[in-house]
Length: 200
Ligand SMILES: [Zn+2]
Image (cartoon, rainbow, N blue to C red; front, top):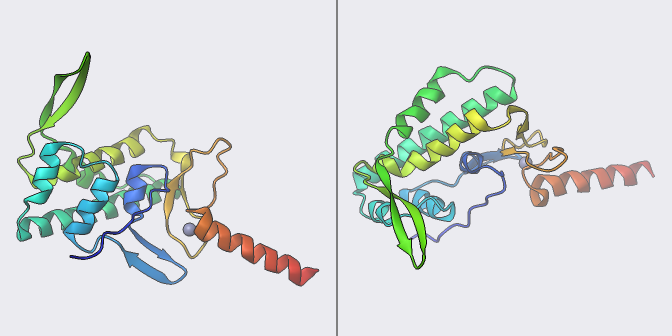
């Protein structure tokens, strides 16, 4: 079995972290969702495989079903990127991505129930999950949250021209520029430092 990846969650919005599983940076291209196992691991690290039903469903997918879910996940990723980039460019979100996201929102199947946790009562979502595509429904919900309730002005692309990672700027001053300080932010700092040295 392939080694488990550590995914990064730096975009400050789950849907954009998901988009960031595929990126181009400094001429390098990476798709970190190569297999269904990668997808399952991402969902787990994102906290989206919380319910026992989801864990069971993800575990027992046949090879054919796994391929179908992985394909749908990649499509969803593309749709969220297209929608977010339209917003960044000040354009209307085209109907295609909305249709694709809606197509997964409808897969959410289940109900809430009240459960007792010692003295406390807790509301838990019990998923019926007949269709394995329901695994992607929480991600589609995150996308709907971004597109409907997010502040469009805070959806941004990394300021490094060679990097296409997206993020949601929830910093206090709304002046976040980089996908991550350790990658593009640091590279910019080093470049600025070198430029200063040349001038001096
Ligand atoms: Zn970047």
